[in-house]
Image 1 (cartoon, rainbow, N blue to C red):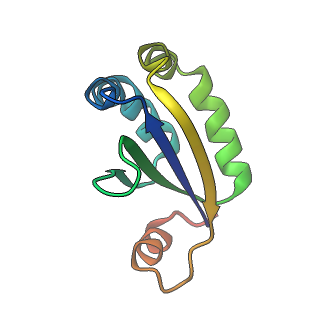
Image 2 (image 1 turned 120 degrees about the vertical axis):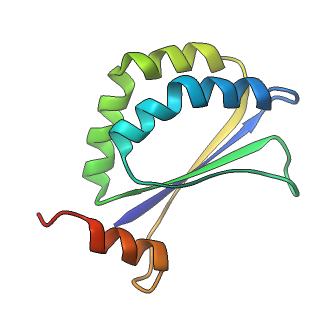
Amino acid sequence: MIIEQRTYTLQPGALPRFLAAYESHGLPAHRDIYERLIGYFTSDSGTLNQIVQIWAFDSFESRAERRQRLQSDPRWQQYMKLVKGLVATQENRFLTALPWTPEVRRMNDAAPAH
């Protein structure tokens, strides 16, 4: 299992518009295609105007296939139009969860056998 942590730093004042667009268009597509949301967070200290999203995937290959599907989803394409110009920077990090991580154990237990 891999964990993807993506951090968006938004333009000052863009947070409400970004979140409204994501909740109405981006999140439904993301949930249907990526399926395993661990969390979605905003920053209250350190660098402000940030959104951090964390998703779990079985493998890099699974993530790549899902990402390709997401890019062609009409809901995602509409979301991308709505947030154009709102994001100042974007960072991506892949993490490997250790086996005793509670959320990862729960996800592994619930995952269908391959």
